[in-house]
Length: 611
Image 1 (spheres, one colour):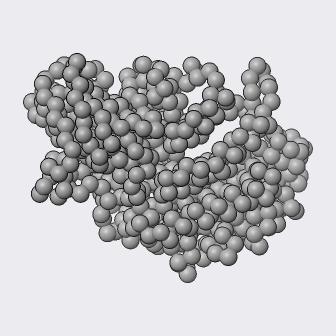
Image 2 (tube, helix red, strand yellow):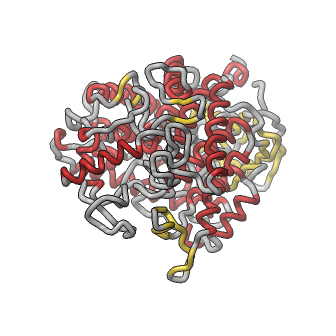
């Protein structure tokens, strides 16, 4: 074998967490069959309504199965991978039949929803490195955003901007219709009104809602949407950078990397021109507030409507994390940092604690809330910098309440395991985290199975999001525990981690059968991981990769078994570990981060096995 190798022998009693982890992986493998039988037809299409016209909803179809390829990366069975790929193709064909997908991509919608769909293909590419169809798809999708596809003229190269918040395979969607919005009108009636100059309420009321189901009022809403919101760029579009980075990971073509950097820099320039706050709307000529009477707020998925600050800070993190991955330069995270800092500077004390604004309107900042730690945690993990740890300490000096996990964290969607409990574990606290995350994952899986078993609904009455709520494949907690990462940001993030696992015997991603892993600490220079072979009869070969995309490098370390510590000589992105029957070890591995160009290539199996 042409790479560094660690061999561990000697049977020992497997710890309960390792036995529980293997039970959980096995149970999830079996539960997936129940979900597939209940949710899909013979051709793989979802058993749901036969007509769908709203521009919203396609993302929900993909989200129903997006967790499958992610679970495969942890160690799910081969049927998980084949199902994941089959369902991607089947759901794409189903929504092409609805008319919301063309040439394999959503015809025209926003990146809040695109970013909930397309991590699916990022995980597929990680699951099967080297597939030509994945490469072709990555190039075709990126072409729609960098200006290479004449049928999808989304990109304005002169102004370094996307031409509409609604975009896709048909290019910018500059006009929306009743059909686009009709299904969601009753839902949107419960949201904050999108405009302050609508009749029926006090424009200064932060809870001002309007009745979208009123046809006369809806006509006014639609007119304003098309006049003010659909022409020009918005920060939400920064989430498209992950799609273009996806093409870079396949090809290494610097055009994709440069597009991401140019687009991110354009938004940094707009922030600088707006006194440090990212404007939420840029008009067709590139002017801030061009279609909003000069206001930097009020755009589509902007500072006011529908969710506020989240749709500014989250895309800024996605873009910054993509740029950091491709360059190793963590200063690209500054766009996100600057907005979190600006909101924190606007804090006010309420009920004995600090609250930060989530929205801005004509009356100024409003909707003050408790700060949410999730982006602070992602920043601190990705940068591993004192700066971001200090930022986290300042805003959240008491993190004792981070330790808990809700028992039903997968109840809304199959995923989004909160990173707070994991973060405290990584800091050296919350010793019950390994058992806790596995127990709550099992609880989420049980809830989903019970929903499957009780679901007697009419398929024609099932909405696009029906199956998200009953997917029992919920791997995010396992990702946190085994890879030492808060997991990917759900809306468009790439899975960045200290460790990635491969089964050498089967030449595939994921933990080998019988193998359990627990990352106990990560920092900017090292990772500590406990590996356990729960199989008392057979040994297993495991390949550790430094970084989800091979972007890091191992530079040395040690292996501790019982009271014996041996040095690990390694200077490579890969390390082979041979765990004999019932063997276990604790590895302390030194890492040089961002030492290599990130890619989807996976291991060079001939080099690793000599065959």
